[in-house]
Image (cartoon, rainbow, N blue to C red; front, side):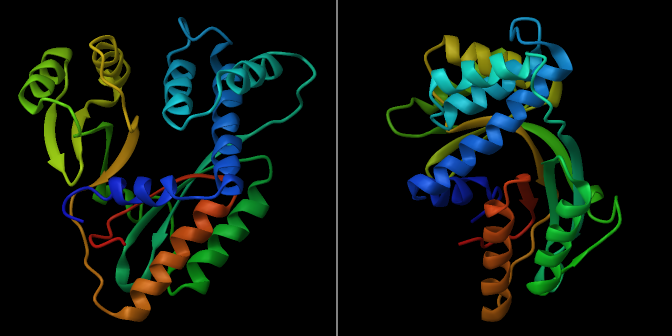
Length: 242
């Protein structure tokens, strides 16, 4: 798709089975637990937790689940100790790939990530090998249906957004990383609902795959990353993601 590849990923995830949705719940649960351990259980004083709770709600994680995870993570009895790691590498034909993971076993996760890169025609690289091709931005996606574009643009820019794009079936609002929470909260207070609202690695340029084997391998590689419980997010610069 043109410009931003996140929407096609979201559309694909919307069609996933109950078992695959459970994986999404598990991954977000890890993020919530880490946020609680780093900044405490109160989202009003822990902006990272507030952001993850918003992400959880956008992914239809039930409030009971969110509260249970926060309670467990703030207790002394929870020994889970997850570490945040970012891997970088190349997919088929040089597609730039960034993999964000939360793991309690960095050797296992590194071996899995390397295996997926190798198996599907890519290779894992050193830190910094592709991240220079991306910028971290706050990205808020809102479905176009029943939304007045001019009013939303006005509200978003007034709230502090840095850019406003349209892409397929969504409006794509960009912010500075530090402004994401404030812009999201302002738009939520104005009555908007989000497909997603999170910090993303946005590529500066995109690469199109034309070889059918490359397209199949890249699709399979992304599936393997998304199905791995340790992998929280995958960012890439593949233009024509299916």
